[in-house]
Amino acid sequence: MAGETVTWHHRTDTGKRDRYNKPILADADTPLDDVLVAPNLGDEVTGTAENTSSTRVTLYLPAVAGISSDDELTVRGTRYKALGDEADWSTGMSDWKPGSVVQLERKDYVSA
Image 1 (cartoon, helix red, strand yellow):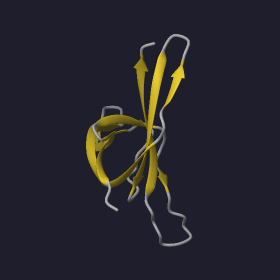
Image 2 (cartoon, rainbow, N blue to C red):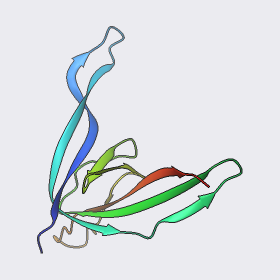
Image 3 (spheres, helix red, strand yellow):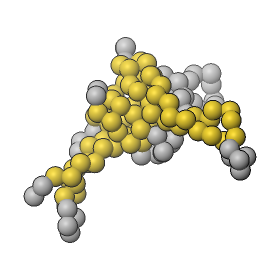
């Protein structure tokens, strides 16, 4: 089964240090190929002052990429925030490495 290409927006170490000896990071956009996309059902949350619509998507990647909760991904032209670090599906009990999974979310404010 062939997947699709999504864009991973993350920060990467440039190899340089600032005057406080901390790493200097740069924005990076990395394409990830053969990703399976599974849309989840969105839910609408009503707050006291505003309404938000939440749309979630689950991505199944063929290999561990290193996605963290600070990252964003563009899927089918829409930018989502990672809900947490990606999970590696490797069991350690065999050589089978099915890849990893990450959940994404996008919140929009909707008028009442």
